[in-house]
Length: 214
Image (cartoon, rainbow, N blue to C red; front, top):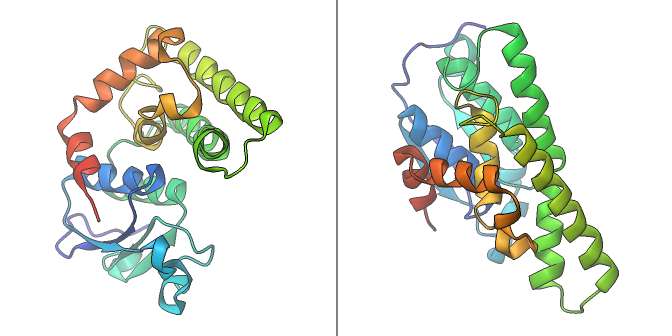
């Protein structure tokens, strides 16, 4: 792929203040590339606007439009994992060049977007937002959330970051992990995750990414 080596035009980030939205604001801040934030207000139904659906057919944020895509032509990308991988490869940061290391990062990125995200979101929803309390659903998703934190805790044993070096996997995961209490998770049970959260939240790029607001 022939990418422009330097970003001279800002990337448009379609954003709302959710863990998935913060994945990309953090990534762009860590990369220190110019970007514009375009708020997609769920409360106003803006995710269903035809203009947004043309960029994100699943009517979800985040999405980006990079005016300097492959061959220096514009490209739109939806789905947070796809965006993170695209940006990591384009700027050759936070996504390794070594093939074995790439496989490791891909494994944990797909783990995050398939489980440590959707399942934690369900635990959060049934714990806090469901109008009726469903004990079965609460137990199911809180149990799964704790199982996933256990998986992550074992992976982080003896490591500063999830795949040894700071990567798109850490960026993908921190937005969910920092709100563990809303998922029915006692972080004291996962000391390696707790340490990693502290490390992540101390990074300047992560701080700036979380500071993006509506």
